[in-house]
Length: 427
Image 1 (tube, rainbow, N blue to C red):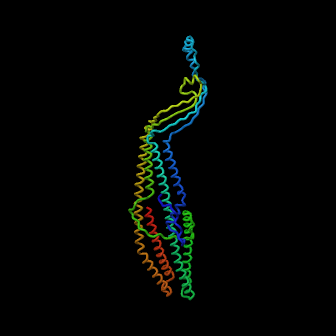
Image 2 (tube, rainbow, N blue to C red):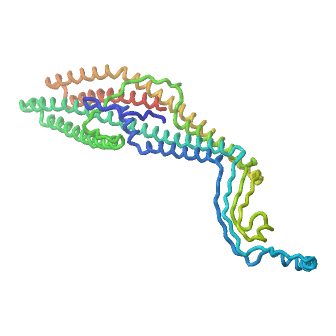
Image 3 (spheres, rainbow, N blue to C red):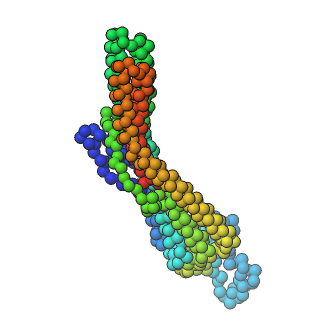
């Protein structure tokens, strides 16, 4: 499997959830997990059936029939005149004829001596089919992991925006009280109070919209991991360094490789169809007539009979279509090679794009702290100027908005950087 589906990581004591925990929980909760066991069992049955082709095949059969006519040696002798010749010699002609009713109970045993490699080809095909189905299941888990990654970091971004809006709300509440106090002392106009109040109401609307989005993301993530995450906090993953030229372990490549192996197994099975097969056989039956036909015609009794021998079967008609079918498999092989080249080409472009994004975010973060400090200093200075009446309320609100935007950008850039690092690792 592509991921370690082991014991579930326990929830931390402070009810904090990690990305790795969500990944493992989602894998265990995903219905495809049950498919691995079914795939393995199916392969075991196929391999077992292929191995049993060397076990002697035993067939028990029975037959009963009534014939409208049967051989009668008396009629033959009469036609040839043998009855008169024997009578002249004083000899009596024995009665020899077949009975109209015939039947037997028969046992057929066949033992394969050489199957042309069919059993080995069937085993190889079964294992190739197993690898192909497991690779497809791995790809399903990989796509699931990407969805968990997107949801988890989407939630982190929403929570970070909520925290920043909460900080901005605190600033606006503080300034609203201050402007209200200035208005009560007739130092500002009513419009200044209204302007701050409008910003507070607009902020509350954005908070409400974020809350709805947060709930939707939480419910979706809870469904996918099979746990209620409403009362738990999401831990921000640690930053990591990812080599852009690392080992390529993408499940798509394993699936393409498994499909190529399956084509190789089909080629071997196709060659086996045109090979001769040798087997030993034995037939034994109790019935009438026996192999000694003349004795059976005289006695009319049931008896034992048997045959042993060696049989060869060679399906020469398999050669008629073998070349065309091999050509079809070669075309499928080339198509898989093209798919692999296209995938690797797109993957290289994605990695370069993701790596460029990581470099951009890293450089951006280097200036974010300084920008936030400067915006905070400007906002504090603006509050002092506003108390002194040297700037308007609108100008003060703009400085508060600038500080809030800078803090929000810093937090979002950090989470986006970590997300890009994890996405590059998945690539």
